[in-house]
Length: 496
Image (cartoon, rainbow, N blue to C red; front, side):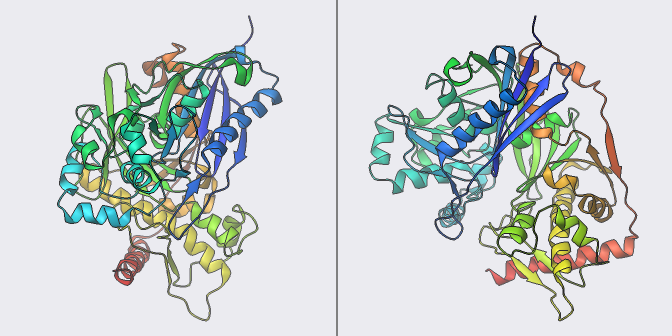
């Protein structure tokens, strides 16, 4: 009998990755295909939906070919994806009627402000756990239906389908047989009632979205049909779908209420497991569904930082201050501090805990002595400061004193950033050797559904970890953070 594997599809904002694991849960290999974002107007961010699909398929084919593994040896596929990104396509032709509108896109911010002015923020928060923000899917769907010719009428006639990226992938992988999503992705649309676990008729009416557009909502570990044999040579069952940040929470083994992880990707996303209790935030966080396995629903508190590792990509690609993202660590270490420079990367507004859609980035504290290294260091430090903002809110909401933070994602490989993060938090930062927690979470969930292991077995998993401990004195920590808060106030004040 040939060896069996589990394959994770990790469709992200900057790349599509496929990651292969054996049944001892060890990573065998990974292949990645980069994506080309589209910026039609300031604040607008789009993807070609076919590029999302084809890059995911291509990465999987490259991976299987590299290790000479046949599709029949893949026991299960788990899909994890960038959340909130919105695709609307024709039910009959399968063709998108508009580009995918990415989660970072802010074109609907004025519409969101009008919802707030109309007093609807509390209603939306109560039903969905979400702040009114252009970040989420509902206003993006509304925009497409209002701006693409004949779209609204076609939607009313039952001719259009909506999906976040997971649904778009699944619909195509199953050749249009399955239109579904999981509770974690549904909870990010601003259309899903996270208490009743159902699409909310009142919200659909509010956003003028016909219910016929929506996917069936299933458990996170569940049977989602089969990837057609024409794609990889044999049919492969899809046994898990999960939003990328919830996948990372599961991949970091944060199974107990109060456990927290932060993923340092394009943005930064901190989640706290709150168990079967739906915790409402009073400090600017959102309540969301982490996963559903069988009849058990797990909730989480989340703080979303829109610009994390993307600030380093900006330094590299737009300002050309870096040749590679990895160079940022070496350059930051050439100076002892930022020389008073602060960078607030509000390129897509400010997320948690501020939720200011109109804020724009600020670089302040510049003097004649400011050098490239100071700006690069300030950019890295901005990621740590934003994380502290969110963690402070999480502590306020939960009442728990958190002295450890589990981390993952590409930017978590930066030792300078992780040490500064520990310093500014006055906490221990724990980084696993297997840094790809998102793909691992999808794999672990798929394995649960495929009955390769149980959640109880996963609780006993042993991991290789690297720990960063705080070595900064309290006075310095308070001084630096006070400067950051002043810079954020300047950002918000300048954009009122």
